[in-house]
Length: 276
Image (cartoon, rainbow, N blue to C red):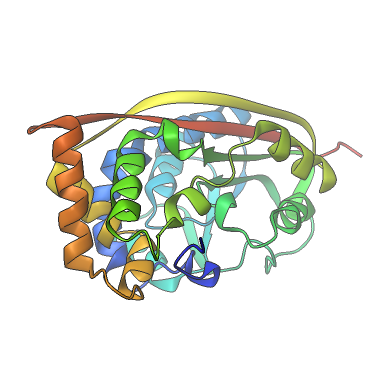
């Protein structure tokens, strides 16, 4: 059965998505991983950091905290996300904002000590090319640090919502979440892709955490604050409102009323550029 939703829409964070994403998605599942990535970067003591797929700046803000002496260049493919990120950054922070495609970076060779990406590699149309670009702009011995979600079954709220939406519209199933955000979860594949791009000394570590939300906020977050919304808007029978209601009902049935502590799982990856 074909999956409803076209892959070219999988990275479209547009319209109302950035505001909902920042308000509900970031505190639910992005803040804790961002703290961890920033602390990894801090231990490397980089002077110049490139962040790709910066989104609304969850990681950018943590980089400013953890690496106060570093110059951060934060990029994203979606200008509305960068606008949301810049509006939330403390005054005087050493951050330069730039629209950029991670697979075709507008920077010179060996410009950065570190490249970092929070949950963006899954959206790269050509991951090996994206990794080649990270390597190209890294100085010898520099680090490419990123994270990626584990399979959807190990991310509880997401799995409950997608399962409910597929059951509600089985003739045109929406599997955006399992296809893209949770579609790059093999450590062996990640290592293979990084090595194909020329990076070495690859470390891939699983991390378990908790995503805290409520049924109402979790439903709105996923159905209205991610590109899942684009797939719903293009669906032949579902609407954003009906999908949000289906998701909320499923979360209530699974977790019960009250606050939700849903399991989340992701991988942290550190790859080193050769020291020519």
